[in-house]
Length: 405
Image 1 (cartoon, rainbow, N blue to C red):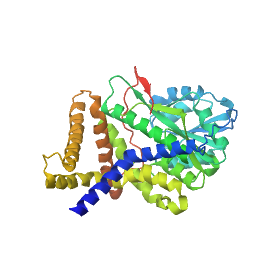
Image 2: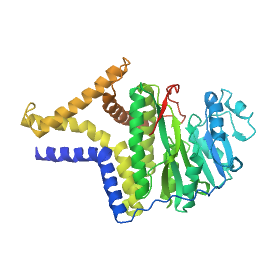
Image 3: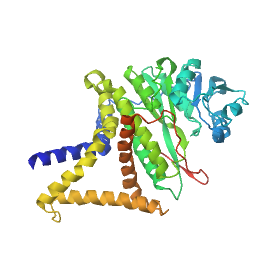
Image 4: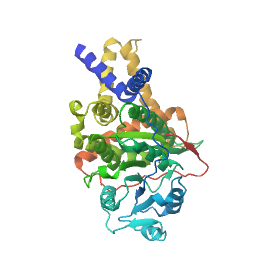
């Protein structure tokens, strides 16, 4: 029983650390560094305006083209210093033909669809500017996003800059929308602290930039291209910085089923990334970057979901030994877990009946996140997760307000 208690508390600690503890540790480290004057924010030079390439790898984005192009043209950055490059491999809905009607856009197209990373590998051979900014075809960028990203590259130690992902919200948010929005708010704060400590651990594919000279061609079967590209930049001795003033907005997944589909792919890609970036687990070589990577990413994609599955039966055995209906510590924790999963189940039940109760969105979304890790791991082992992105259906954008991520 003593061994079981030890395993239980170690498991509970790892789970807590993965989702909340690391954030607390980061907060305390940052506070101490600020008090000691060791934390200095690099604000960059607002007059720094090098030429940039706005790179969009698109597949059948006909419905978003006019809006995306108009949004890109309205960005507050000298337009003569912005090259718009679209790679539309495999698109058969008229996307490349429509784009060719715009004189200021360079279009690369081939009929074969080999996946986003293949399109990026091909397109990067045509990038001539010192900085390349990646963005998705279905996202809107904040007006000053290019300016806010570029100014951080004034620091020669910065090799990659990640913008912020934001989710459109509404008064009648679904569980997917509210859950995704709350998750990205928390992630945004962690990224701010990560960047202040040393480096962000991975960029958001909706909006990020790298120094073109640091581009490394990525394996053609890569699932999380943004993560792999940015982390390899960091492993080269540069840092990934984060600027929430540069942001990309998109609508949330239309429903939890669509969000689960997206999360499963991300989870499969996460496992793939951990395997391919296994050298980054060496804290003796990469130091603080390894600490951040393991704490913020690796645990969530590997050990923590497994422990969540094991800790319930361990807790049951410990609670049973002291009496399930007693007021003991283990019985309290056991029934707390039962209540949490019951809330997630109730959230699922109400969501499918279009009944919105936001108090249940967090446990429901948390459950979906971890379920996706198991399903994604299964897909990774079977090797049946296609590199071609199957876009999750997104919610409508009418009469909605911006919700910061």
